Amino acid sequence: MSLPLDGLSAIVTGAGRGLGRAEALELARLGAAVVVNDYGQPGRDGSGEASAAPAEEVAEEIRAAGGRAVAHLGDVSDHEQARALVELAVETYGRLDVLVNNAGILRDRMVFSMTEDEWDSVIRVHLKGHFNTTRFAAAHWRSRSKEAGGPVYGRIVNTSSEAFLAGSAGQPNYAAAKGGIVGLTTSTALALAKYGVTANAICPRARTRMTEDVFAGFQEPRDGRLDALAPEHVSPLVGYLASPAAAKVNGQLLVVHGGMVAVVERPRVAVKFDSSKETFSFDELDELISPYYADRPPNETFAAAEVLGLKRC
Image (cartoon, rainbow, N blue to C red):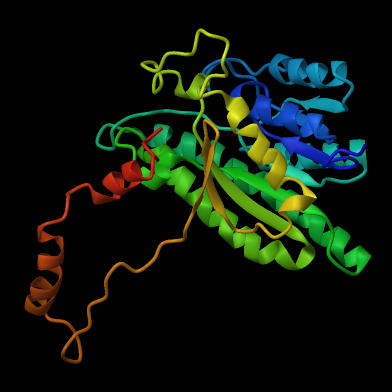
């Protein structure tokens, strides 16, 4: 009996721990050959010496279960190292079919206290890291499509966050990067559709090294049940989006956690105001817009997210 990802190859970035590890294991379980990428720094803020050990351990775990995997120690925020990562997949497996971007760091601070380096480092790893791997994977698929004279197989799964959807007061860098990833995803989806490639983004909620303080008050179950915040609730969706079954899912944002998947609509116009003259005056804008917001909650975006069960993480 064939598996959904038989014959396909995949890259998973940040796959040495947490979500990335669970995703790499799931893709391998579904039949994919995997390049396990991780820079291996011990600090969730990107501090400490790089180490091949986390990626090697996950690759060995896949091989021990009968799958195919190679490890890659590399910083995806570095353009040339991202190129080398994609080239490794192509050289090892003959082509690249699936790219899962997951690598990230945290350097939390309120916006009035954040340093330039804290801003730049998070944007670099998350947003630039997603771009770097996407750029080289996209070039690979475009080249293959031209050679084939038609569409080829390609899947991109990017990692955004509910911090972008609902706001996160102490994470302006992280929320901005995750919002940027959604923009990158939708642009990529439009650009690559004609080549047979889809691009989607997920907003996962999981207990990992990066979120250990966020979920510190949520106890893990002691009766043997799977933790509602386990990364294993997220990885099946990644496997599905990577598969042929998701061919018509493109340019989408999906929230996933604890046995729940929610498809997020693109922003819609809530209300529209038209000027009664050639252009608005200050007084007319005040008369039209101020009453609309007068009785609305000051944090309405976050309130709406809570109603949907999309509390910040």
